[in-house]
Length: 177
Image (tube, rainbow, N blue to C red; front, side, top):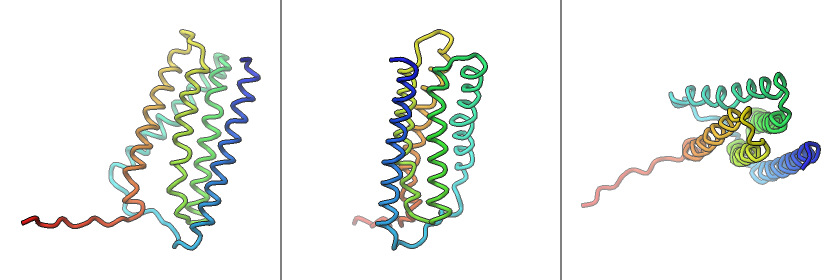
């Protein structure tokens, strides 16, 4: 497949995903329109700042630096082919989260990561298949693997936080006598 074909394919794939995710979010928002406005539970857990910082550095800053070094500075266009869609979809996820939580105060905010994170993991896996196994790009391949592990862990953590986000009450233990 030529570089132009790969870029066109990725563009169409990302547009299709974004259209489906946005449509699903809009339909869910409409279906849940009568629910009370959603706010984040306070206080945030003490470990949250550490995890959030880790995700920002490992999931954002390091790939951005890699994109500029390998993709722009050293001219490996395949690195740009992998990371530009990654950052576009990451930005669209953040925008969706901001709109659903801050603008609409909708409980739909909770489901935005459940739509975008599996797709991001797919993007990273797809990036591994796009990059040629050149020795010069081995560090990018390692980075993509680290990113897959990071976002998979983030997805699992998001799932674990569902009871807290929905403020589900703990059931008291009953004595068995």
